[in-house]
Length: 79
Image (tube, rainbow, N blue to C red; front, side):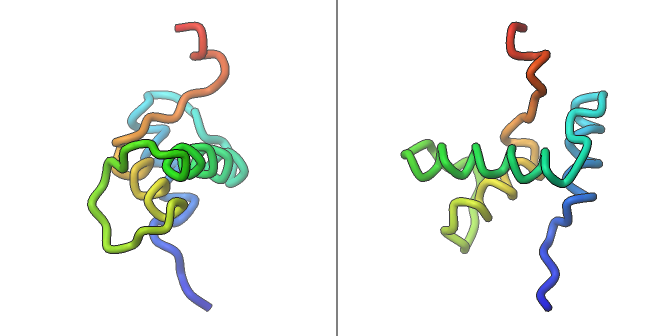
């Protein structure tokens, strides 16, 4: 079985540290954030990381992990 890098736990820890609060609380929240960003990439959004992999989901995960894309909760929508 292949090991995915970064792991769900690594992504959650890094995003939560960067935001100064617990933004991502489960694997589900990581999947939702990555899938929303992947959809943006498919729809033509500029890719913010350099990668040999052109798969939108991989690019999205890399962007989130690198901090190029910020993840917020619904409570931040109005800010």
